[in-house]
Length: 424
Image (cartoon, rainbow, N blue to C red; front, side, top):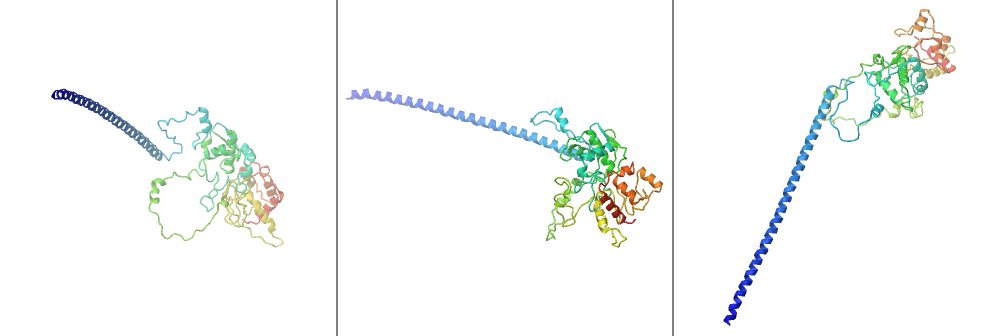
């Protein structure tokens, strides 16, 4: 019995040793795997940290670039504000690109670079005289603007209106309002004739502008406009505009706390946009404003002429004929005035015209043919006035009056009756 136990004890010992070795080996393997896992996680954390750091550095670099561009743009804006008084200052140049598109071809640039500046930059070579301009104007422009730029219906008036800018209803024309001749040339070249923009040649544009200048009595009838003498023309209102200094002088006051006390309780409509329409559809009078004296105001190129007080006696003028003459006189109102307070504009005041010596209105600068008639003592009569109204240039060769003439004999008769109703 004891011998058997002695054999069993060593067996147990070897078994325990084997189990211990197995446990030790398994524990060592587990520890190695754990360490490897931890090392992998450490590496991942380090990689994430490195990536985050790189992204932060990239974001910081992008922010610095944007701030640099902002500073550059602010500097450009400041420089532009300092040079705002120059109408011909070159456009600012920004360094760098946005990596978009491609460089424009020279042909593409030339097609878009058609603007004309006040100093003449951008003008193409060419020339056109007043008489050629009249022919082109009558053919391409008179349908809307009248034969002598007086405007048809509600289409814009291009001539006259001098010294009316301070009036309640100023007449803003090329002659009375526009400070730079380049504005007229550039606009006509780009946008006219209406519906056929871009069809005029440079010579035609020069001629039309020359005719408009002549219609405003700014040049003589033998004037020729070209790219060479363009900047020599002095516009009547060249000093009528100033550089906008409100950002420096007024904006700070406007941004103060607004007053919200003692406000009006009601709002009164004093004008409607329909009465300001200047681009009628289909030509002629506006489809929105029929130029009547009904519900709304009627706008014209000059102050309404005073209505003549006529006698209904047998010896006085026919009231109906005078009324018809007042209507016919609308084609004359952009240049002439009659009635109380009438003054010289593009043409002389016409009060007391019939029976007066030709070319005798004080303060008006007549053309040579009228000065010669005045020196000869010629007098306006109903007969020679009718001939002049029918064909101004044929009757008085060399007149600066660009009107082609009244076409209807009945209108001529009515006009003369209307003019006779105003005494000097």
